[in-house]
Length: 187
Length: 132
Image 1 (cartoon, each protein chain N blue to C red):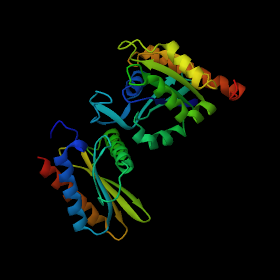
Image 2 (cartoon, rainbow over the protein chains, first blue to last red):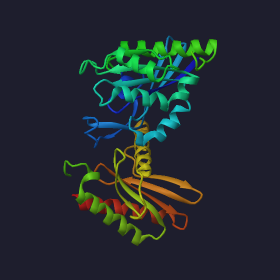
Image 3 (cartoon, one colour):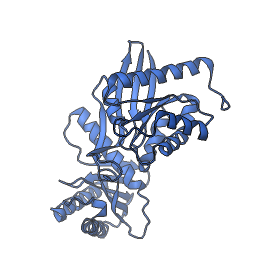
């Protein structure tokens, strides 16, 4: 059985834990702690090490889902988990203070994961605020990182079907690149 | 506990500094110690003159959460303490009873593990008593 390790990254409050809980077919392993940083995200708990879930795709592929903490002070966990991942779902909450900047910062941080696997972006909480639009994200991406080809979706992390579609798109992307070789930076 | 986050609460910070200083008096092999919130913010650290960059607190928070996850998965109750043994010392960390705080300490290899465990337990209990 083929295996994929997929990282769920993004700022605090983007919906990483929720997305993994929506997707996972096993009880999710969570490492949540009481959140004392209510200015950044007004939620009761926050992930401080990792989330872990699994999903089986038609009995042919197992996908291991790892969620990482959103705060930079936990970036040692980013490094540990990045090394074993093949791809990344980057979730950006649209109501974050600087969502376009957040997207670009995470893409830079995980650039090597893009190079050897694949990345997909899910914009969350578009029901809370409609701007920036997907077009704004695409425009910022092409302006700042024309070397990257990254699909961008709006997604609700609570919706298992939507998250599954995002995940499948990423896996197809990764497998295509594995078949045809890594993308050149100039693409 | 007040609604002000522990790492911004002057009283909790002062209590934490006092507990850590007392810990050092009891145990000269204590190299570094930090009191942190469950989500990895440093409340106090020792030695006081050492500039904390919160790195130790963040890592201790992750380690604590992972140890809790393991005990939860194995259904063996709550984790009491965590030990990381190395060639030149050991890190011991444990929760402050009844509070969302963790005490983490690095002892050099002159200390016996038993004494280090005992001192960390007493210090965590003392911190809990000061907050209650």
